[in-house]
Image (cartoon, rainbow, N blue to C red; front, side):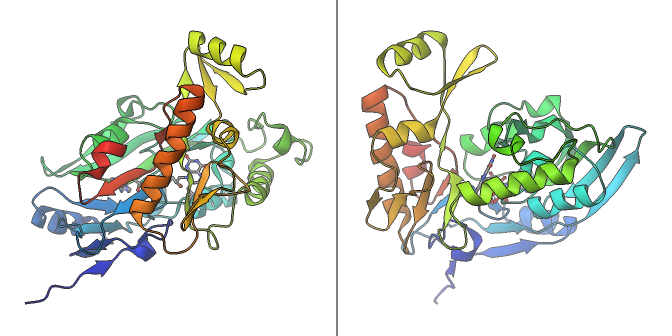
Amino acid sequence: MTQNILNLKRFNTLGLNAYCKSLEIIEKEQDIKTLVKGSRTKFIILGEGSNVILDAPIESPFEVPVFINRLKGISVRKNLKEKVIVRCGAGENWNKFVLWTLENEFGGLECLAGIPGSVGAAPIQNIGAYGSEVCDVIESVNVYDVERNLTTSYSNKDCDFGYRTSIFRNWTLGSFLSNFVIISVDFSLSADWKNLNTPDYASIKNILPANPNGLDIATAVLNIRSKKLPDLKVFPNVGSFFINPVVDNTKAERLRKKFANIPIKTLEGSFKLSAAWLIESCGFRGAKFKNVGMHLKHALVLVNYDDSSSQEVLMFAEEVRASVKEKFDINLKIEPVILSSSERSKYFG
Ligand SMILES: Cc1cc2nc3c(=O)[nH]c(=O)nc-3n(C[C@H](O)[C@H](O)[C@H](O)COP(=O)(O)OP(=O)(O)OC[C@H]3O[C@@H](n4cnc5c(N)ncnc54)[C@H](O)[C@@H]3O)c2cc1C
């Protein structure tokens, strides 16, 4: 008997051919209970596939079912004087949700406009841009716990948010197969539309009008993003491929002595390096290997130029990592989650 093998190419923004034996779209909360239970607790769940490397070639497809989260719905739960609590379904598109908050004159998400992906994945790596992180406005995250067959709410504090991390990200990395589903996120947004924090970035400040509101800030952010990043429709990618490394004072001083112009940002007692700068210094900006390369416009964006395989992507990433290690003694960490049908993810994770 032949079994249908399905291609997940259109479900990941890197455009990798990756195969599975079963694919289901989750549209209602009830679907989770029925489908997820049938999968005997282990499965892969995707939002829009903009932060994953799917490593499952045709000869080794995912054996576990793949679920695509499309749980929708946005509602105002509480309307307090200075704040509003808004619940958003995990399967809503992130940027559409940000635009909805702006149409309603709710502040807090304007700096995060234009980030691809779903609302449910936003807390996982605590998405951030231009000095804002989604954890600044998350009230709680509502999660279906498969093993216990119940829905639990994690308060902001329970989520253990950090730079590009959270309790959920740690669960995901521990075992790449999921046994939880984020079903919705509650946001605490500002009703004071006129007094929002302006991002402390010259490129944005320079194009903002005096006394900007949330929409002005988001428009400036979208404008800068479209200039800085390659067009996703033309150059399949997952945004930043590596996380900006954070080092201690001793290491930062050592680097400053050796590389006089190295950019280092102070971050609450530690020091953040620019992964893009490190990669560019190793000569990888615009470099290509077979069908993969770091984009000329932004050295941190790895692009699938033409139907490359996950193996090519991971081999190229390894080359970049090895060069940065050799020159700066820094271990770059891959930002997207590697979902692999083989043992490879353990090596690269
Ligand atoms: C062009 C581009 C620019 C980007 N810019 C930024 C940026 O500025 N800042 C930033 O922080 N990120 C950025 N990203 C990364 C990405 O947009 C975010 O990480 C986004 O939140 C991923 O959403 P997704 O729905 O695509 O997640 P997916 O890629 O589908 O999934 C990511 C991980 O979350 C898990 N997951 C997804 N949904 C659920 C759920 N409902 N329940 C449980 N687990 C789930 C998946 O299993 C996987 O492990 C960028 C990506 C691209 C392509």
